[in-house]
Length: 134
Image 1: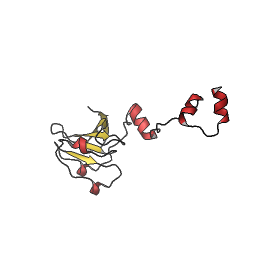
Image 2: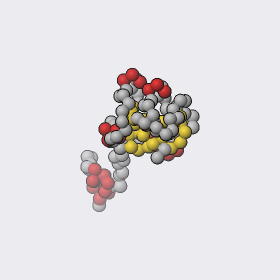
Image 3: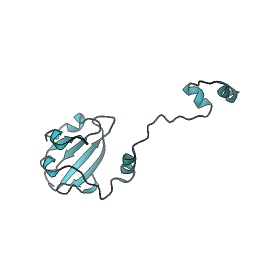
Image 4: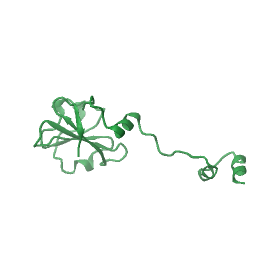
């Protein structure tokens, strides 16, 4: 009976469509680059893509907006509370004071500000991807 009703009705509401066995995916598909990075992490050929002169000094952090020119990025600052104010889709760069040769990149969720979804470690001088961080 439900099948006959579903076939006869021209305009269906979502609940009727579910009852008829039609499934609608309401979750947006992730972008291909994010799918690959999430599943396997970046390739070993991946680089940070930030000029070394624009990295924060050791012991400090910097919010970086991918796609914005280096001269338009925020200044380096204390790391305290920086994740909470980082906008959606941004990166928080951190240079540890103990290991000045690396930069930690905390990727902020593209939909929710302040939510760190990945931490990756790069070589500060070459920008080469080294490993997943913690």
